[in-house]
Image 1 (tube, rainbow, N blue to C red):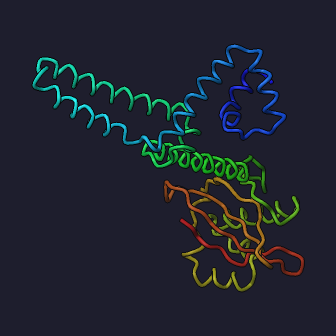
Image 2: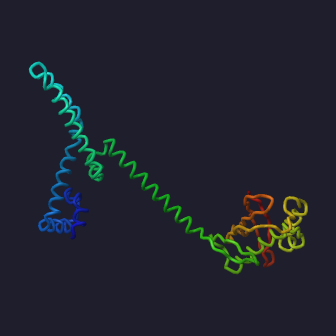
Length: 275
């Protein structure tokens, strides 16, 4: 056992919490290492003091009472020494409290074990809890970022970013469905109803004809593709989402596609605009 291992295990060793073999190994090291032995004695003294602390926690009040009694008794005979004695007492109280606070901060594990009700110990515990929660949040964000990897991909002659989420289809079908979504958007901006009819279900195409202002945006084909997701599946439906922008609006918006398979072919069943 090296010096660092010994110092890391001094608290449980002094508290008799180590496994017997580990404790014997640590004891052998202490016999041969003066530096670690000094650290052991210092730590043991601190632990002993902390164990006695709960019964002495009102030390400040006791000292104040003792100083007041002493001052009253000596007031008549030693008036000239009053201020110096009071100053000494105040300094002693401050020193004891400062030493206590420093000890708790230096040895939080001991403080938590022997003086859990002290405000400073409670603050340390709260800080530990907040730190653990922050680590969990950071890990969750890292996992989320890992799950949402982005890569550039050529789909149907269009280069755009692909958000790699879990996909329900093999690579070929996934690309085919993504290409259908991009073809629909391009046809929207060109007013190409013939193309739209060829890639949508009959029911959805009739809906488009009835609401052309909602689905057809003739803008000379000026559309900018931001990103597209992999294809997800919800029972018999396939979902893919595309982020786009155009000259009508400086901000991006999204079209959510719902597709189904009809006679072995993928068809667009619905498109929802999501700003």
